[in-house]
Length: 155
Figure (cartoon, rainbow, N blue to C red):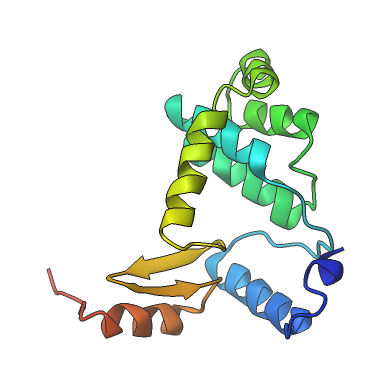
C-alpha cells in the first residue's frame, strides 16, 4: 500500500493524489485511483530496449497508462511483455530481453549517474546546481526555471 511507503513522513497523500488527478485531467492523461506501488526496474530495462527499437515513446505511454490509470503491476514480466506488444514491439524479443536482463547494465549506469548527481527521487529537475524534486505544478516549474536566469524567449 502506498500509505505504508510514506509512513512516518509528513506527506498528505490525499492532497498529492488530488493534485495529480487535476494535473492529469488538465493534460488529458489517464489517471486512476491506484493504492499500490510497484518496482519499475524491469520496466526501465525494457524501456531502454524499446528506445533502441525507436518505440520508446509508445512503450513508455503504454507503461504510464497501465501503471497510473490501470493499476497494473509493472514488476511482472507477463504484464511488461503485453505492454511491449501493445507498443508494437515483438513479444518474444521482449520476453528474451527481460529473461536475459540484456539492458541491466544500461539502467545500472543511469542509476549510478543519478546517484552521483544526488538524485534520489523521480522526477527531479536539475539546473545549474539547484534541484526541484517531485511532480510539480506548472507555476512551480516556471518559478524554478526563471530563478535560474532562464527567461522565455520570443521566436
